[in-house]
Image 1 (cartoon, rainbow, N blue to C red):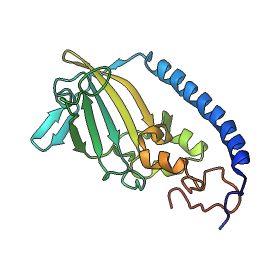
Image 2 (spheres, one colour):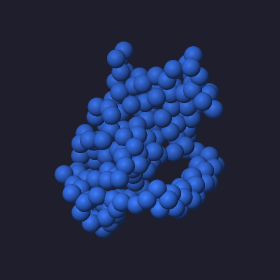
Image 3 (cartoon, one colour):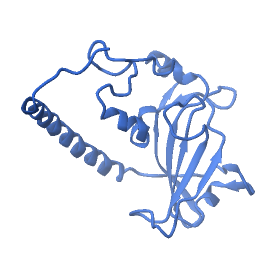
Image 4 (cartoon, one colour):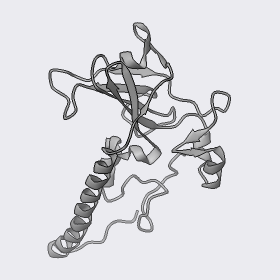
Length: 204
């Protein structure tokens, strides 16, 4: 197995400081993207969504449980790196700054969205079926896919404010982020790694 090159502590420090400068730039860029996300408009949800919960059927509005925000995370059935079972998890927060310790988030588990054309026209990461095929993303036409959507409640009205798909959910995938800090990374074939690094097919 290939290994990282061996260096002196001083050589390592020089290389680490060069990387640190890039990490700081990435953090500032992420802050800028977050600021732009906070300025996105929102769309009123007029469709009546019905969820099957432990106490029977419930609406999207009911999922808020009186709170202002809710975020729905849909995990694909083939997910291997997510520390949860395949399901849609909806967590609600009590305020606009942080989750109060006295108000823990609630969770609702339901069936993940399907990519079957018999259910609805295929769309993933803001691309339709033809665009996905043209981009070489046929894998996303199989089964269900990961997604995260955010909703805001104003009175009895619910608004959709944000959605992300696929690698747009990386910041929620804590195990993968930890692997990114290791020499071999996630060990998936899409990564740009030195020759000889252990890698495997991402969806193999």
